[in-house]
Length: 357
Ligand code: GGG
Image (cartoon, rainbow, N blue to C red; front, side):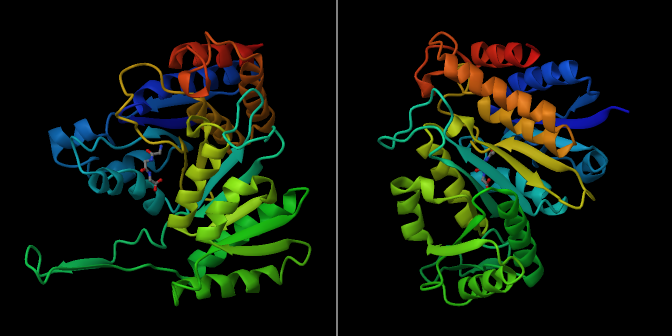
């Protein structure tokens, strides 16, 4: 039976990189004889909001819940809809309602791409950021008082539940155990944020007792960001709260040359709900409509989706195809962010051809 994939391109360059993600997936499906059935949804974008006054129809959960996975582009077009409305009306609803509590974001310096960090070669940067994805600083608890007056007050709470913290830590420790270096770094700020972050640190120590073979360290987020730039080779699996994980998983790929190649998987590990696969980058309105966005983040996210669906060989072949095309370094194929003169389509087609062999 075919795997049913819901496709939501979203906004901006999401609509441009999505066709290349699908092209690559179709090439992999053909080569490895995998049945994929794609269904496109036209909601979850800012034009839908302008027409309907909401980002998605009221029955979006019913419409999507029985799919095997969601393949997602990018959301946001601040000139049309404020970012917090578009994000909370779409992507954050998927993560929360489908309990996609893991956001897995690989960060790898690929062959052929020049890191902005001097002297770094492929192999020097190869780690995962595991981001807590349903609570933390991204809570909807808070409010406003005396709005519009000089006494105006705004409050937004950080939420850490034992279940929420422990399950992301367990996932990260399990991942570290599968890696040769068996190393886990925790992102904290327990010197300044004096209730939630010490709690996070306590739960890390508690979880570490179950994983004596894992080498655990922790850094406050300020020096951790500095060390991403100065010593990216120190890291293997980095686990952080929703906000810290979000920041680190943009900074990490920036150290590998471009955020345009970075993929992510929003995972409901129990499989009770569909997981969602999307590039780390956003909708980039500044370059949207020009056909120059790098499609690799979308294609690599497709590879993560195939692995999640149980097709490791096909997933590896997609990543190998990305590496091959990058290694060839054809200026007419590569997009501008990685030093080429090509387009979203030239790069997407080259990768799909490489997957097809
Ligand atoms: N493809 C990812 C995307 O559209 N991201 C927009 C964004 O701002 N995301 C914030 C987040 O991941 O929390």
